[in-house]
Length: 489
Image 1: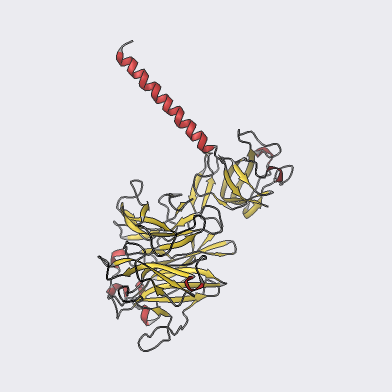
Image 2: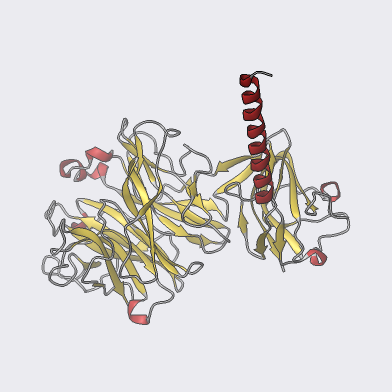
């Protein structure tokens, strides 16, 4: 045997060994048990798709109401509305937003930080707060125009508001935004603010992060890691999004990039604001709604990225907008930005976005001041836990989960079938052998549209004997969308 042949065989043997090693690692990873307890689980990525055939992850674009939730109808708003946050708080819906007036544009004193509230999330009021003197009158909803002590005194821009469950009463409400600190070089950094009630705010005297970007920031307390989390814009593939964490609110390390466009995205695109938060009603769900900026058309629409830990992000259906641009000439035909926050209303999720007919580079004062170009806040509606789904068409799709350890007596599904569609579920042991009485063939097919439908087999729906015993779910579906599942006690 010649040296070349021996060398080739040796390379082949090493390659085969490597393939066996990789396969073993993948098998070991696929066999790791996931503790789902009795918590709701979203089908938004491949976490629960250990194997799959004819299954596709789909983004379910939000349904526009076309409501004009908030419009520029006050003198201090006559240039434009801007970034905003919403929150359900003690049975009331609350909003904090920025706006500009023509008179002040563009100066360091052109921004009003304002407040609105609502009893139903649809009809909003701008209450007379009596906190700020605008043109010799306090009959307005302005919280302030500039804030902070000497050396940290400036307008607020890109503010993201959240409620901190760990803070003492005097700092229960917090916000992150752009701020100017004269001792810094350059002076613009991320600023922090605190409030006891969401109306009376105090800015911290030092920057909380050495970063600057001309868009909205997102922050929240993440109880699962016991840290504050900060998201904002950073440099990467053009505009990108970064993350930092801290045990204390007053100091964050520089943000590390966690999401950016790449070669799989259209050329000449990058990301704007994060609009990121941890979804409270399901296990391991972090959501981000960045605006995708298309340089060629100068437009921005809103997309959805998801994560299980807030660090590693994926696009469930790359390129599909969560909120698309409206028709030409409409109030949201040029540029869209998601507001910070989400409400649950019955079996729906409500989010809010700002839309304008103006494109990114058209937002100059002479254009902004025209009534037809006013930026408008509007509400969109999604199915409860239904922003993403695992979907199968006319050809039957199948997927099997990794082993799951659950606490509950029944299995509930959030699903929708079309036409002759159906969904069936079987349970298997660690070796893939069907659990007696709970095979796919024993499952009573589920049809229709259900937020939480109980899975039943010929012998009933009770899974109490399998509680805390690792089992794999095998799902067979046709003309159906499966959004989430939960084992219920």
